[in-house]
Image (cartoon, rainbow, N blue to C red; front, side, top):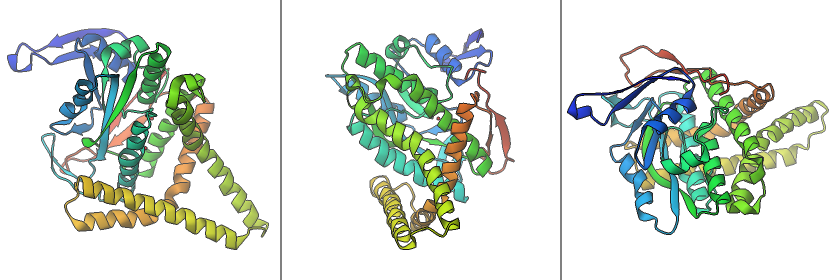
Length: 362
């Protein structure tokens, strides 16, 4: 969309601040406008409702300065949940566990995804996603790869895939790195309606990104990304919820027909439940031993309690994923609306509309 004006403050204290006034074309279009205006070698993408740590950018830049053998094209870090934390003037004064169940549930999700999942994929050179909440990128590579796509709601994942594809096809040695430190705090949905909108949008973004870069599927020309990373996201992030949904339907059918092998079913259920709980508890303990952000023991115990209940919420996640697939099949576009409570407890909850262009995602 058209840029209406570019402004810079005459105050010497803000001489590095540039404000772009443009027509609403969605997040990706706005990011592209910012990339075109900036002149530095690196740029940082940050969500407007995120709070960053004081040394976040310093830590994100470090891999670009230290790596000599390969070109670092992007770096991401751990995203934490700010719900119920005490925030004053953009700084977190006290870290607290969310007071509501859904945000607590997402604390476990984010802990597993960022401290275990993405750190492992980074070591395997299969990292496909740098969170849109905060990431730093090589500007030249982003421009040569084509910038952010306005044709997907998963522009963060699609950009990393396209950058990696460009570097591989141009036969350049590169690396996408990950910093296992809490760098950014963001607000997550606290009610089912908002969570449904977010997760269905993530699913649509995943499908759009994988479809766009389907050439990488089991393609050895893209290294571990093509042989491990892409297939994992295809089978375990896209297909797995659909298979699980079919399994739920088939289980109900067997129960109605009185044909379910109950001893085997209960044994399998106990195994899967125990594995899920142990994985979550391990992630909680790993986070506490490494960073110790939650100072009160009862907060850690509350998270362990949520870990015992979380597996029973999996059918809801499956429903969100299936609904996202249906929306993708119908060709739904755009971000829709998102409700934000904000960081101040004194203010009433406010609703902020996030709209993308009509062509516009652990």
